[in-house]
Length: 427
Image 1: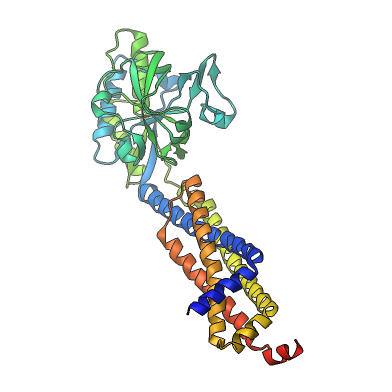
Image 2: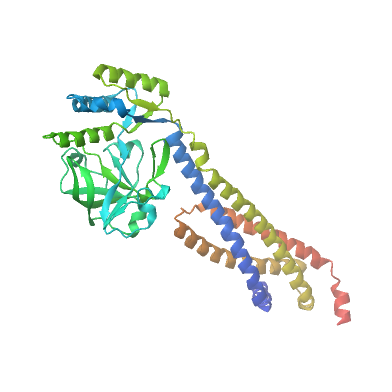
């Protein structure tokens, strides 16, 4: 056995530099194969979570129509009280779950981030005034984290007791994951936001960051919150002492009542329920339920599935290519070392020993390639934040064994066709 081991190492060393080119090719093949498996498993997990979150429920945007002639409702003496009662009925309804969310920008001073964080970036209208930058923000009620399954990567969600108190000078905020390159938990940021009865200077304290890729349904579409600021939607608003304060508190309640309805029922059924509440409270015109039954869900992961298919095809092609290249290498190596093998046979080695030597050499190639491909996979997955699945190693080891067996047996059959006696006679 030791003789065979020594011959394997000797045979491997004879073509070391050329063999390393084969190893590099195998490393590329195995890395792409494993990355494809991990990418596929991650996208499947993401799709399953996304479908569980959105496909099994219906989301409807609730909106008011207090514009034009209908704006007179807001000027009535009891409008604010009616809005407060309407909000309470939404939160206590047995017909649906009401998610209190609203997109309304806030301003940070001396902001250093890219244009993607700005309010209006998607429309090419970035808003900036001096040292104040208007940034995308989503105002959320306390239970929004549970309704939309927000994942906090670091820090914590808002304290329910704090949300039920009036706004203080230092407002807690949660930042989307892309803000991590700009701020950290505990940072104090100066800016402006409309709170209680005024729009003025505020101090914000970062209490946490969302996980990357956190999504929410808002205004009939899925919104990625990586570039959003999450503001707490306060429940304890001040009592209006003037007409201007009353107008701002009314605006807050319009924000609080223009969120998302989550229900198993149809839009028509939910609309009827909303109509009944509005009629009971004498709110005219009625709030409207926008029919938005998740038409986008089936398309969200379409591009990722295409990437999975492309990676899978590339993996298969590379595996076949690796098998062909390794087989050709073995055949060339055998042909160039016929004298060496002839001497081994004369020295007492058997043909099955030659097969073991070929297997041993190829296994060294595969082990070397597997080691470097695993290192490359770990680096790649860490760079793109993809979870590594153990099954990818099992599959690649099986692929490696398959490539080894095919290449060795083809080259060994080729070796058996050579007439070593005639070859030695010529020498």
